[in-house]
View: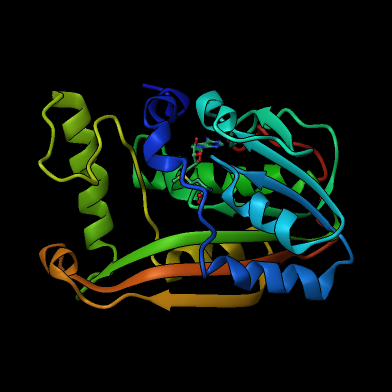
Length: 247
Ligand SMILES: C[S@@+](CC[C@H](N)C(=O)[O-])C[C@H]1O[C@@H](n2cnc3c(N)ncnc32)[C@H](O)[C@@H]1O
């Protein structure tokens, strides 16, 4: 099942519109660094973050690109451009922005293996950069689940358990293991390594670590939470065109 079909059929689960406390990190950053909020929200789903931007900024130019038509349809556009498109290389837009926000989407852009998923994430970031003004910022928000001893253990288990669930069509009895879901979470270190390999500098960072719970104990998780990166790419790179050469 394509990612767009998965999100179309789970639009109610993913279409929450309440603003979140952690979004204020990016809102504050945008306020400090740019005059108006000129932002592309990739994987914007129901548009929660753009709604917060609208409430906060007097002047905005906002566009949401999402692979799920149902999620886009869930919101009133209010002058926000809504585009059906997807990472890594079908964003279907023709303008550049001051900021690009990618919130809880990179772990959804998966391939057949973890190595392959990382390649698609890299490709996604480089292609997104193409729609950014010079000196613009990419705002990445992701979740981390890091295990004891081998930090990648839990996410590797989640990645392959979901693959098995989807292949055998036998549902794992946990509400987070939705049928046809595919995810590849990254540790804080892995994501920083991906950014570094693509010449993105982390120029600001915010993290929220969650308390231990029965879920973290069952999942052998030592550290879990949210990581929010503000990225800016070093200039003078040769790849000024949209990539498909990384495939
Ligand atoms: C977990 S939801 C996050 C929604 C929103 N960013 C938020 O945090 O409230 C993931 C979103 O990414 C979208 N998505 C999944 N794969 C995508 C892709 N390859 N390209 C663009 N959007 C994608 C889904 O349709 C969904 O809206």
